[in-house]
Length: 147
Image (tube, rainbow, N blue to C red; front, side, top):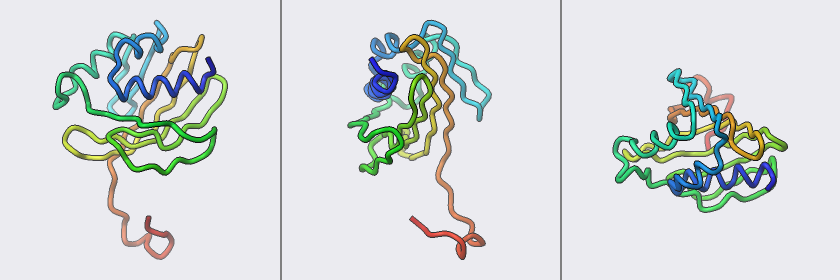
């Protein structure tokens, strides 16, 4: 299985809260990092436990949905925004970057960037960045376009 296929299956497994598939796709020495909060997640069991114990998630399910990952490396995707959606997947070999959006149980939509390193066709290292949307400062208005 190609590295891209592993990452696609991993994104889909996270979206479906498929803990069995998540465990299969994670390297036994998995380490995940949330740099903004300083957290380090060691081992597949701890990552799965975070999903199972997420506050506000009914039965340990965040209600996420990755409908499909479309395009080839370095092509942008502009689909409707579901609860969790990959917008851009780029990379090759063992290094991949995912960008997307996440709809949290309280209804907020945040942007996400996930850096993934594979080892032996399994997710070995993962670094996740999360950011809420914010209003554009008015001083930048003359220099930018609004989406």
